[in-house]
Image 1 (tube, one colour):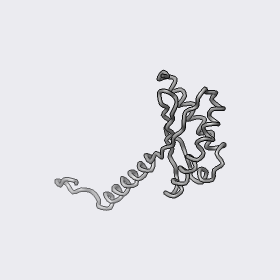
Image 2 (cartoon, rainbow, N blue to C red):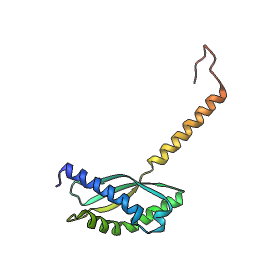
Image 3 (cartoon, rainbow, N blue to C red):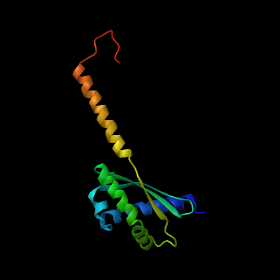
Image 4 (tube, rainbow, N blue to C red):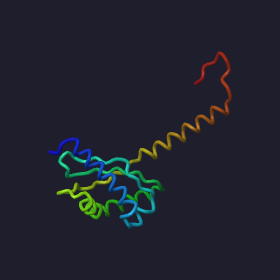
Length: 131
């Protein structure tokens, strides 16, 4: 079992190298058509598995295609990580679509809409409660 600090260091190195590989290494058009960014990397304590969370900007179909491209490029990416990180055994990569940013944008849009509606109604008269 690897120590916690080593696991964190390996996760950080994988995140850095994966970001570089997504920009310069992956030639799959499915991955390149959507803007893909790595949001989190979690490495198992035994360093055998790695969950890579990615955020993808684009339409729903572009996001699905980008995820399919990432999954098909996983063996290539694992091999490149092995060469770059000089690890005895490189973790197996599992990609996860992180929809947190999209949900955050949606919430901000709803809040903006509520603020616009509040501005249209005007100020609340004295003595009445705002709902």
